[in-house]
Image (cartoon, rainbow, N blue to C red; front, side, top):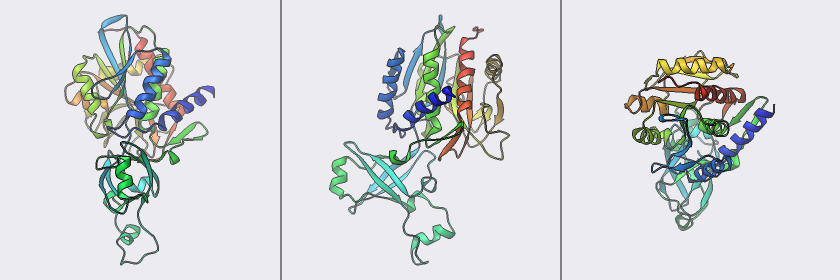
Length: 348
């Protein structure tokens, strides 16, 4: 389908823009350029959120739709004299999910590629890594980055404690599985593609619509909290992935998921009802779920009293925080629901 081809191409561009939490300048440049091409006013706020505004007919009321632009990864702890770099997790990243392979260290002056390493397999009980083959889970403390650079070369590149590590672009290219897309960082680059589609299609909605590519969500929804503390909103909707797991009654496929509850609390029933009505008017069926071990910009902002009404619309995703797989139709249907919601009469 042409729609799926276009959506795949956009997400492919997005996932190739590195954006570990707090070091998101690469995707920021890309996003501001894309919003400018669409012809929508956009800017970066002081926290690092990339914000686009679609002016409404009634400028006294505003809603916001967020999709976080940061990705999980790791942060450098030490740089050794032999060129090895030790890292610790940034967000919900696990070394065994990435596996041994190419990673990128985003230095102040230069990106250095290295190999996430766990040690040799052909060892006996005398080697510490033997236990990770048979007994204990592999942790970041047991892994290292092999760069084959000198300490001076790494210093010149600006590799230091605090430098971000992400999966290498060498390994980031998405693949197509029929009507599915498979890639690292669909969480939450695929949701950014929804924001871009809305930026192109929404014109003079009933109220102001802020499209917020939020920063530092993976480490506590920091960007969304900053934005919602300063911008009065009548509703906040977060776009997210939704984990596919046996414990949740969620099916893979074209149907998006509307959450009633997550690990931070319940979502607003009135806003969820409005979104279900928007889905019906758009001809889209939705799945309903209450999940744990999960939070969004919306649930965290509502928990801290920054917004009165919040919701989370998501697309079912396999292998969350890993090499994720999602149906392109579910992503496209999120756009349809939100477009219908943003265009419906305002009843506040």
